[in-house]
Length: 509
Image 1 (tube, rainbow, N blue to C red):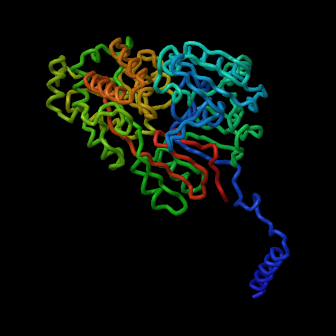
Image 2 (tube, rainbow, N blue to C red; image 1 turned 90 degrees about the horizontal axis):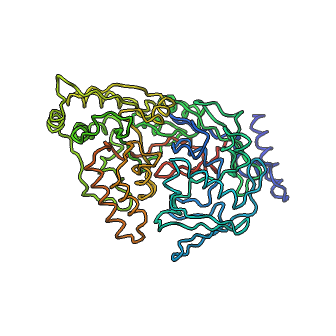
Image 3 (cartoon, rainbow, N blue to C red; image 1 turned 30 degrees about the vertical axis):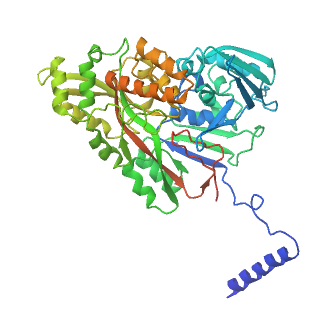
């Protein structure tokens, strides 16, 4: 009874304060109290600190917290947004972009941002295969003054502006002072420190109190690697983590049915595929198109979708995601045909007495169980699939060496022409098939410079047909994105291509 009376008196006192014009005490100026740290977990981790020498999605999540680009894309509306450039214009006759830059931005090392930093960044990026395809259209760059930059192209480029959204601006002095960590000195909302980086484990970035834009609410964001999906889900349920990325379908119900967490489902442009190495260090048997086509016929995509996604996916139609501009729904696809696969392999010299041996690398933490399914399917076609590595760090080393047979990975389509160029151009770092074909390169250059939308769509369809016939890729399926999010997480933007925006995400208590 005394406790009840005390509560009533406390309530009367609080109401009296409000009635007298005084505010009752609250946290964060009337808002719920916000936790200092937001924790994000994934099956992969920040592996390379140089933004120019890498295009891994999970690295990009951290890069986007630390860095800023000239422009950004709002993937919710597909509109271009100002970032370090406040405005821009394009003169078609001279093929020249003019950018007006912010004059109130400093890098994390205290250096003032100017047009010189953009020129340095783009010139440096041209020396890396991951960025060359995006920057190859630049003929010249001119600094008019510290806040005005002109970029002249050597040919029309339909998606040049869009390609700059992940060309994060670097600082020359920072890189010259520290070759390893220098590329992680940016102008973004969060600051990277080697003291808070545990390779292959986690990274913690801290809020940039001098950020030029709206200040985030989270003081820290931790991005950590938890290989086992079940462990990530348990961490979400217990509150150890706040955002669980790449939830496998088998774990979906453990989030959807659990109080205090939510399962977010999104259609995506995420293509799961296998790339056959057509490069100089690749096996000779992939030079035979009968072998490449046989592996496509030997892959039962429907069974893989059921086993790996429990229906949270759709079969791929060629190499271009169906949601992307220019995709042709009538593109030739390889339906499962075991007898056709065996017949083609036999013509190429492989049968039950002389099986085709293929070494396979993949990311086991993300696609657990996939290897065994594919191994069993291809065994029926007289293919002996042998695991090389499922460790993400070793996988990066092997793929960078270009000395692999076949590689399972994914591509998140954002724009069609840039995506095609990044995946298939002979100079592109993301070209995991290592295709080097003059005819294809010419087709890619032609479509990327086509400014007429109708003609560009027709040319994209023609490339899709060419790639299907070439068969150096085994497209598997278009994934549905499953993300686990704590119910007290706010400000998170999840995008269809997994270029998620974590900058303004925070956790309330």
